[in-house]
Image (cartoon, rainbow, N blue to C red; front, side, top):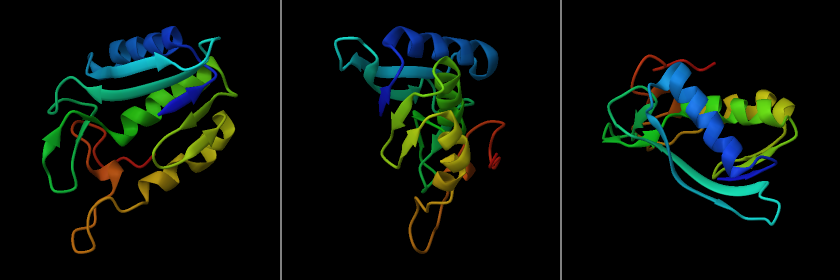
Length: 136
């Protein structure tokens, strides 16, 4: 994902705070790099330390992996927007143009089938841990 409007240090702080409050250290920054001279445009990849702890998700077929769940991304994005409400976040599914736009549109990404035609699956339902099935 590409985040415009926060720095690497701010993303690191956001993840550390979420880990301390809710995720027991399971959210990891797999890769992060500054893409601009000011450092306020970054390319990052998030995941989890354990595929069986809160914050992880399974694939649509049920296989566990170190993938950050839909709710984990939601929480990271909200925390990024708390740092800068005008930040922009580009993911593989959409572009969020500030905090207000994010809150208006993020739920729609949960409505996209990530499974197959015969075995549909939706991101909010693939979580491992206590957020399983929560769409808000």
